[in-house]
Image 1 (cartoon, rainbow, N blue to C red):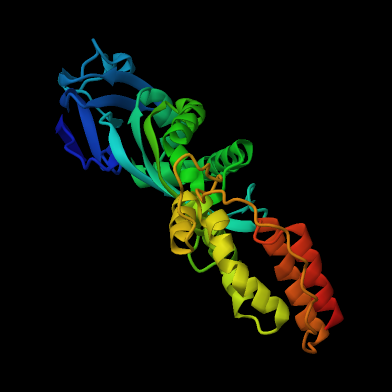
Image 2 (cartoon, rainbow, N blue to C red):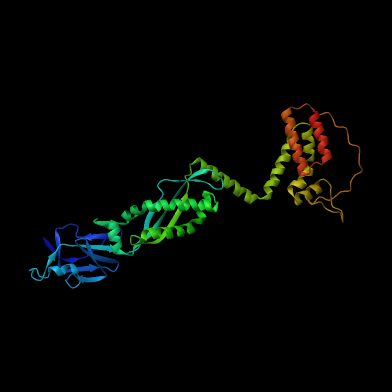
Length: 362
């Protein structure tokens, strides 16, 4: 059985802990040199007892600094007492590239649109071993090594449960749509880091950072498509603002003017008059100029910019002409359009009643 004179580890950064030697075929001696790098800590383990930690530098294993060797002093080994033991190295470098993600989507009801949508999230976090002995005793145990992937797998269940709960609570409490929660990634990441740090500290591991890179939804999900369409429509309304209402009023007038029949003719004749009310002051002024309503000096204007003309002498209302026969559905549509014209101020009450009688009598 070989006796080891030098123990050193230049391991991969993905390994958090490593045992030397891997088997029981080699022995250490009381003069074995133990080399520990500045980013490492080492422990000597014999009979399940951890001695250390040994910090950065060169250490000579002897009865002066290793209590388990004192029982070997009286043994006749010529001043070089061999013994079977293990050396555990712990990597204390911060690893910032530990990935996480929700394997199964979180089923949530969107607070704003009241539809169920699947939510996914992913990101990364950083870890650093702060209590090497606690880490070895509670996580590593009797394994040959312990990697970053093994650590991520160990904490995956705890992390995903906490992450799903925090994301769901954030969406519900803030009343935001699932598609808008990305604006809260920074604050949500900080909240989760504080929550998850307590779970990891119990095992001697510090959570140096925690980031949520994205909270998203499947693009092909029907509920998601509905949500995105609703948000796009709301954005359009916000950009257009009141002009959308003006445009809608103009569409109503155009539809009414295109209808056949007596009522449609009256509405078509009134569409120019309604332009001023529906489209605002500039259009009203332009329409006034086109129809000969030029503003005389001192002549007041209406709110739409059309000069107020002197009221003409009242004339007897002409007898309504007989309306052509129309169907019930057409009559109902004309009445709706007639009401919209009165609401917009295109027709006054007297004109509305006259046209209403004509439509109903047709």
